[in-house]
Length: 295
Image: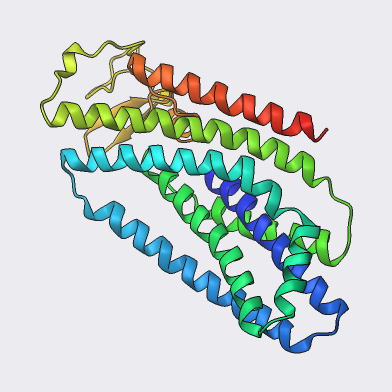
């Protein structure tokens, strides 16, 4: 679900950018510039893959130490800040057709390099954001849906084609309104997970004692064996740690989704919960103000 929402939203913005630029070039019968458009798109996709590889390598190079937890905490906080920034400020500029068309016309007065760079960096930004958010999602859940990832890309390209090239009237405002709200929860979840990883760092580095941490709740503890009263339907077995996890544990079949998307934790500390609530309220307030002004 996370992979689908992230790739669909980011790739739809990229598709709209490409489609609008293509329409401008098509109207002016600029064949050479249209070829330049596709070169820029392919180059930016390749560059995005390189960026994704670099970010993944950095994430994996830290190792299984206390510093890994510190890195993940910082990474989550930074990603949450970037995500809030992207969905509430940049998004309103990216989807502005008139602004994009004016940028294209300005670049056409210069060399072909200006047009290439305009397209390249516009798409690369979307690729960087997609890679950053997907890595953050994978870091928090430990799972990755290739089906959701590919479906998000395909559907985004299709919708972008229908809207821009075919000129169909699709209510994109409603789409961005819903997905922005979902991403608010996703960003708040990153803040919560970052706080949890900061706690893990402090415990592993012996700065605090785990038993001294005040928990809001501590439910659905993993089990080595199931009793006669435990229904196997509600548990999944993890061979790596030889544990049974209840489906509502943050490593269970339902809990892992709630953890990745909403920052759910089956044993949160008070700081984690408070920061999650504050970031969620902040995001919802921004979301309400953003769309109320434009209603």
